[in-house]
Length: 528
Image (cartoon, rainbow, N blue to C red; front, top):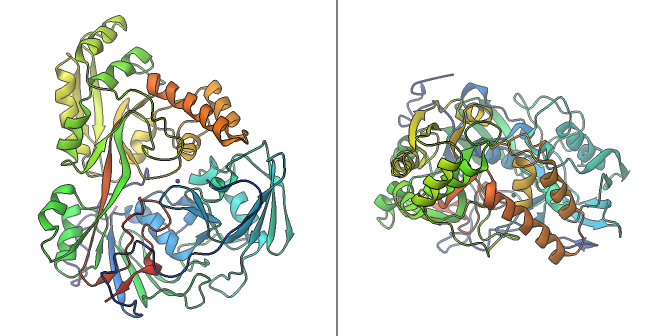
């Protein structure tokens, strides 16, 4: 892992160490013809003026060091996702409301049983001039589903029977499913479900995608340079070039933005936003309700294998104090469930509040008086170290001793996925059913709470097989009631996602939660 400043005098503020994870996402049934998204986003922060072509935009993200890759199926960090979006396309992606919107898919249609779906592709080409075909789609999905690999979208694509799926013709794919799946479009939009050319395996020396930008160069942990794809199916980008630069420290990102070394800085802290908002030097963009903030309890090991201990921890948290202290008030309180405000969210459950007496009672019943537990955290994400300290003090009021352990930015997300018992956690936006499939099923590859229950898996499959939306919502509500009562995620808040741009930057969407279609949509950005 490279540690220390980059040897490049253009960017004195950028330092390369550690990384930040993107822990981090429904359409009607039957035939659905879908139009492409063209032109700048409707909610673009254009500040007036006509879009113009030309120029180079430099964007600072936290990255993953020397282990970084441009393989879109391995995308896990926000930097990975932004680079993948620039080079590749998915069949669909999630809009601001977390409903699937078309990308390479021109239409999708199900049979009456919901166990076979036909997807027609729009006319699009890869950077080498070859058309995107049904064979490319099937190769991409079969690669993701390889049982020997741990690609991010594997769990989301699990309902597909890829052996039985087939290419009807060059631009038509017939997907066979293992069971009826009402929300099939969400599979197409899954995080990391990018379409690559048939047979592609080398993504770091000369990746070929169908996205808005073409590859120029890549130095893992440092820089990736792309240029405009004039033949992009959704319209050529305005920018001539786009460069992603790695700056893991938030101070390095904002200082480089202030100093003119970059024009876009991803993930700024609420404190930074307050200091610069409305001052005229840079623009602050707040993407509301983008990031779930919480703690993950490992439910398969002591002390959190006892649901009474988990409930007690739910009751230790003063959520308002956590939002005010760790997020500087830039967010809203959570209720131990993912997806507040998203479709299918269980709105009717009582807002959980701190109850230290009840927490003590539960711990005593569980034989956990004087409990000591280690809370793993890191400066890997905004608010993590602050929330850990605040929760430590809150727990102490009920006699629980929380030891805060600082982890490495370089390996925090991998370390905490399987190790430890309690850790700081966050997530970007995705549909609630995707949250279930990626994190809460027995076979989920990013199951940070080790929540593994066959009856819960069965409920998920029941929901996916339920055609009537009202009935499907009732199953999702039942699953959320279970998680609310005894799950492993203590979700105390939902944070604003904060970006910073130079005053010359236009076209950045203001209503696009992180990980959705219009987030990091650099093909629709221009320089005034």
